[in-house]
Length: 305
Image 1 (tube, helix red, strand yellow):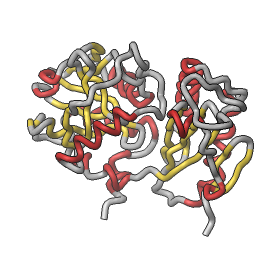
Image 2 (cartoon, rainbow, N blue to C red):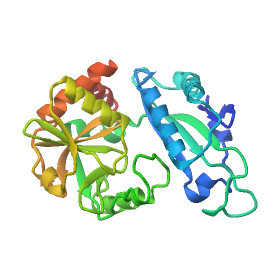
Image 3 (cartoon, one colour):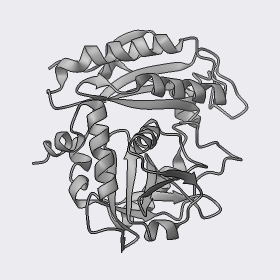
Image 4 (cartoon, rainbow, N blue to C red):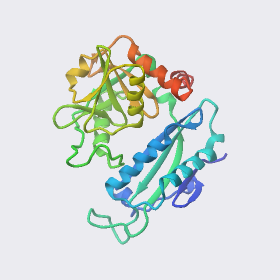
């Protein structure tokens, strides 16, 4: 059986041949950045935007990558084309780029040690796991606000997309101990809503759309939702919001690369809405489907047993 091909440090190789040194700073310290795009109908969506964000993260953490953004795009497209024959017509891929600071030789990496060589670069793809989230378009998500807070920007700016995210892991562990199917939401240190562990949060109230402005990753899907809302003349407000605003909202949803827009039904046991998806959420889902040329709900639900 043919194996997926990925790119690693200048070569296109089968996945099973990819190996990262135990002395790599990404492995030892989480000293890395990454980005994740996806395809719709086997075509990349806003790949340029994802690569631009990757390079902003690289600049912010001072990793000097010799590969130019246009070269990274070409590599990603080649990885995609090399693997398209391994998925069905109704499947799609995640497209992932990972860059670590590289290898520190001669012992454990420390925060004061430096990489002795070039950054480690990996570009790979994986099938979008539609079964994982398809049912939520009609049933809605159970979200739980974790006691684990988002890292304040005085420590690490949330706009840096990094694999160093133990707080997200701890938030998921806490939430899934209560409900294995629940999605975690985080507050900042002031008690404002921020985001989920892999997604951005939106609220709908009185026909208006609300989303956090501070201490969140500037998601590409998040921005697409905001742009679509403007086209639909849905007023959008970015600011600081508390759990009260979520509990009293008319609708709520998560924006996420894989599932695009996932409605929220219940938060901490409080039902937000009986209608899933709500009218504004449904309008945005349709607009997103029209934009990418794929009915995202129908595609995902076709993978359910």
